[in-house]
Image (cartoon, rainbow, N blue to C red; front, side):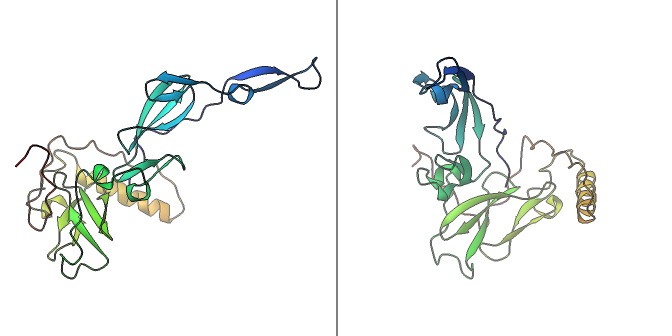
Length: 230
């Protein structure tokens, strides 16, 4: 899984001088929020001047408010922002969130619908060759194949693996003009360096192709129809 799109920066709150409670000739330095209760405000996405707050309409979005100004952040695919823990977690672990919203409308097959599926099943993303879903106890979680590979539907229902795009019909040109050989070589060298205790800078992730080619629809559950469709 991927990390959130932008990392939350930690800031120190403004400091204010407060008179000592016993010795009026002395002053204490403390954060404003500790000296005076922070009043509620009505700025967009910021109920208070400082803090991190969940979006009211999207489970995977949250806002970092600094002096009343909001910066938007988004959890990785398949994750949702937990208001209590203040971190991104699997969507099915966040009570306020509808899993279908984060999963893009994808729903897992009904129990017993897939033969020999085992305790979990894998399903291709309807639009993106690199992404796929894992269904565990009826809950869908979105995953992504490593850079340079795409998801290939397996021979049996609910199965599949990440393979080279040239081996997946319909996804051969998913990465466009990117040099996949160089990317794979960089990742291989990085893995060897890490196994030998040496650190090396990670390979730069290529931009997502603007026109991904979806695979055929064999063994692929279809998302529910959008509103307005017959």
